[in-house]
Length: 164
Image (cartoon, rainbow, N blue to C red; front, side, top):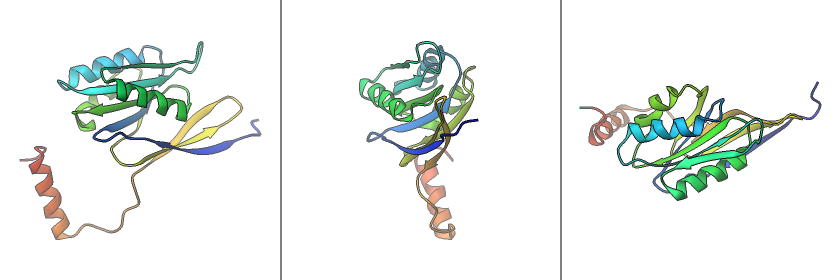
């Protein structure tokens, strides 16, 4: 029985113009497979990714084609410190462009968040190590959309090319 259980909230920084994806995987080749999934999903995507290895050397493995985003992913993984967690930062693409490719990576178990909103990862720590309980993505809703809000949403989606 584990007597000492701690819960911690970790703030995840999001660089200007970037989105972050946080997930869980299960094998050392995750970084290489995520790299391939990202570069084949969106031409000219900029990204950095890091993965917390959970056994053997227990290193933070990393890849990417943008040094700032790679370093930011490494720092986020250091803050989270939970085995088999990965963090991907992207620019010049949206999560919607890469999420299905990431989900199809054989090692990926779960996606916790994909966002540009302020993000917090809720961590549990036991005698064995750390794990992700969940995330806080953005803020609490302030109300329910009305007719003007619906029209604004529909116009925005067409303006950015996601609906016709």
